[in-house]
Image 1 (cartoon, rainbow, N blue to C red):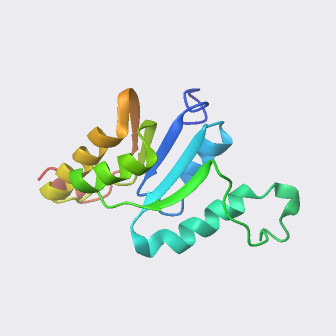
Image 2 (image 1 turned 90 degrees about the vertical axis):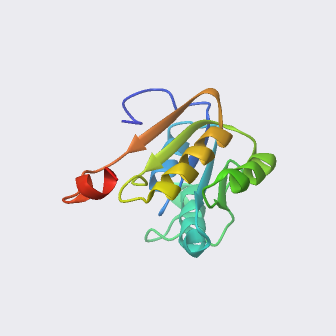
Image 3 (image 1 turned 90 degrees about the horizontal axis):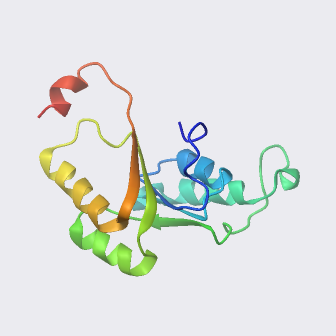
Length: 147
């Protein structure tokens, strides 16, 4: 979808609960002005490594491994828990985003987590900004997701 619909270029992009960072890194390759990859602290080492690998020109990679370099300035890796207070602090540090990507973040969530996600999105999205959700239906999820 991101590759087919041209709205990423020039945007400040937040990849919320990025996991490996793949979706945000694709947004970077599609011309995003900046990309901030977020997740919980235990995911940061992998996320930072993937951002560093994506920041090195392809010709500098040997067997898919890049030299140890920090990410480019327009790719940032930050820890972020969902919720209004955390999002306000994050907003003060990072500013609002034109586009927020939410890939595989909306399945089997209790009500308080849904509310925290909504608070986070409201705080961090610029007026008129866009949120893109990607979701794969899972067997049994219709029961827990409907609650």
